[in-house]
Length: 382
Image 1 (spheres, rainbow, N blue to C red):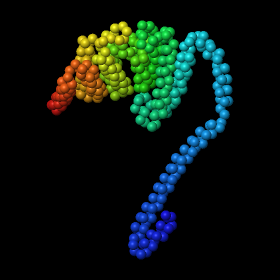
Image 2 (image 1 turned 30 degrees about the vertical axis):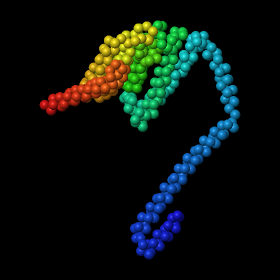
Image 3 (image 1 turned 180 degrees about the horizontal axis):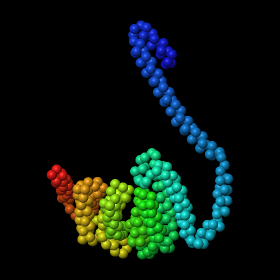
Image 4 (image 1 turned 90 degrees about the vertical axis):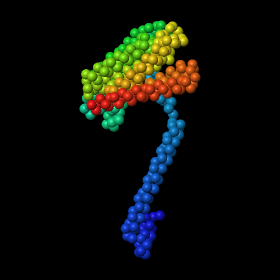
């Protein structure tokens, strides 16, 4: 209905004392806003349908165009760069493509790093943290830095690929080599982390520590991070990371180094608990061949250590109000209960006995944590 006609009808109703002047104005204003809503719905659908037909027309237009000239340009570029690639192949052998791609990615890192630092300098930031992803002003700079670190990480990994022995197997660690560019990555990201106070760079540095250790101790090129064939080495590295985190937190409270300490702690907990989980399933020692039946005593020892470590982390987290330790302990205690009962005891014990034992352990753990919490509350009250 047109607004002029609606206004005429409302005037007739008001003249015959069927509605008041205020009601006349309210009804007219309501219908006026209602028509605006309908108009906006129409505009929205115009945009939707228009976008569809633009896309459809663009795809149809592409089929009409001739892009063979782009192929000619590409072939011409290949012809120009052929002497360069032949030279690289002569210098680096069959792995020359890894060198070229790695060098290109290092240049990409430099570009993204420059863009990210522009945002950092514009906002006068003393440090850079993961939480800046949530800030609309800093999100672009954070994304640039992360993309740059990813490019640098992949580039260093490709350069390290050149050092691999010929025909190395993914699951064969007999041929050892020094992972030079992984170690370079540790120092590179470590320098970026501490020089620029960048928590994101620290995470990449810890990742390259894991790659360096795993590459030299486990599989040929650490395709399983620290290499599951050496879980004890992974556990040692995890303990070192946790202790490093404690040193940062204790010596530097309320600063960027405390943030670094928290990062060392949760990455160390993650690696350590994964190592304990692996040992609780496959044992501790590693005979040749990577296929073995785990020793019963090793499984018992590993599972007991796993359980005690999870409970210890929960108790420490509850006493010191460290949510990271408590949450990791709780998470991996749940994982361990699944592992020990479904992987080991479920087959040997009757389902009923195993379920009762599992329930009693969980209730007992809860009672112990509750007792510790109540004891702490009494001591605080005193």
